[in-house]
Image (cartoon, rainbow, N blue to C red):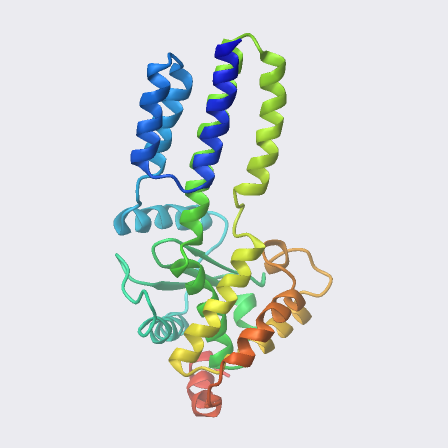
Length: 293
């Protein structure tokens, strides 16, 4: 009975320290305590957690992002337009040059996807993808900057890496709970716990980015645009056009993002605090030349 109680307490501690951002050294220490008590399953889990808690280097961040990007490109073709691609990458560089994180392991790179779907994606390490459908919604360079700035926001706020770390923790917790309960002949409890953990994983592990992260990326985009001299109000007009373009549809950004109205509402206070001179007209000719309009 004491072993059962210890196991349940250990699992509770495991989930708590994972959620609190425990360091790898702390997990290792807790693993030693679990080993001393004779509970090998929980000890192994704490050791697994210590590895999960290790910092991801910029190089690892890049290669993780590249792997995700490679998977993405199995579902989308790259749109071959060197002039457009170069133009978008120049906008990207203007946005990041004065940001908090202007230099990555292999830099920031924008690619256009040959799809009429209205969507954009980003992965860790600086990979940004924008569909033709989303580009067609833009009517100015500032609108394009709004799209790219949002994806840069995800990268600089390290949203994908946070999702990866959360996934590591919950998977280790789930494996430990199942192994420990099954070993003790508590298969019914193991099944119940498995269902409970499944619900936790659904809430915790992000399939894509959470709504909160989307709102944070929007706010970061406003900051990036203002610092680069772009008109932040272009974010609002872009969201409105995206909504009109996707009305009645359930694919594209509607599937992976909060509604445009919700995003606009969350940005209202940020925009009121952001004052930037509107210089959009100075970029009109450049936009037309590169967009072939």
